[in-house]
Length: 164
Image 1 (tube, rainbow, N blue to C red):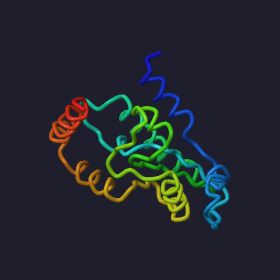
Image 2: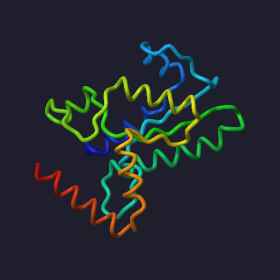
Image 3: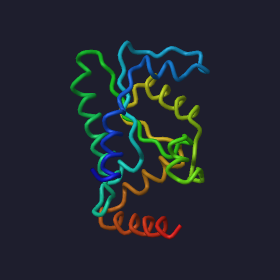
Image 4: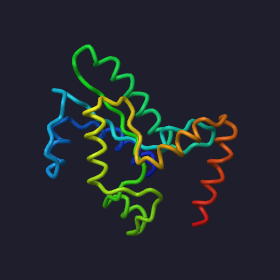
């Protein structure tokens, strides 16, 4: 199995967290979560963009967001809250491992801030929570572009990243 596909598939399988698992991660916070049952799917801002030439990773994350929103509608009558998280870069050991020990990414946030944002989304029952704010603003701007123009912009970005 090719490495990017395997990573994407493993990401899909391991993204649903129960409220209890999120609570265990939030030992520094003194809050309780509002709903009895919450499922949280951790995706990426890459999944917000729909354009020709998008990476396999972006397609997988987009599918994850769409699946999560469908589960939200299907499980709501049973009192199960389903939240999709589309975050930017989070300073994790995995991110550093993938980038040779570096984590010099735009709008990088700490794991602690990511947990705080996820808890915020659960408390406020946000169907799709995008963070950090600067990344959300850029995503909103880019998703408003016509698909052919978005494809051109993203191709330039991919080309720029490849040169680094």
